[in-house]
Image 1: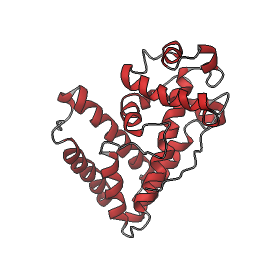
Image 2: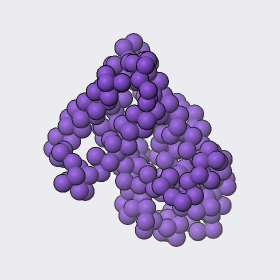
Image 3: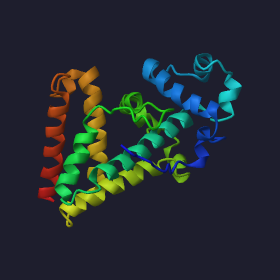
Image 4: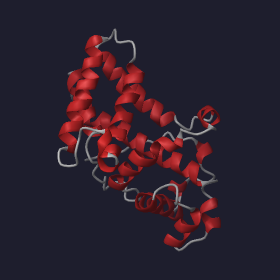
Length: 225
């Protein structure tokens, strides 16, 4: 798959662009791996520095704190996902088929994109599922939003919302439904693997069950609207 994508990531998230240096890319790659291994709460720049045989000071030259690093990784993922969705739906004429493809993508495990050798999307996806909402469920979210930290997520929701409107131009809540589809896919995936009593899906039928649920939720809402 030839997938080239631009990343509309706020410059306020980093001190030095990590994608412009070998160390910066190493920070991104190993941050994903370490967050996937130990979680965001116990993740520290000291642990990351030990993992990459660098210094905390070296990491602080790129990111002010781990929260901005998390937002950066979340933004990076949503930029990649938006491009992937455009790629998958490029030659699809039916808006319903486009929406079906998007839902199947959101409910499926992500395979590593070999073109982005410094980010393993198969590890980044579960990090986003379990940690992504922590990037905006904060006291400083309004200030972060004013700095356009969440622009990639907004653009992804707008993309999906526009496809929802293609299905039903009179539907009143396209962006709300778009963000709901994404968040439900993440939360149900998390519950499935961690708090199974909060979901009807099991690990054995994870994709099929979640896809059916999301399609029912989405198309039922569109038809009623």
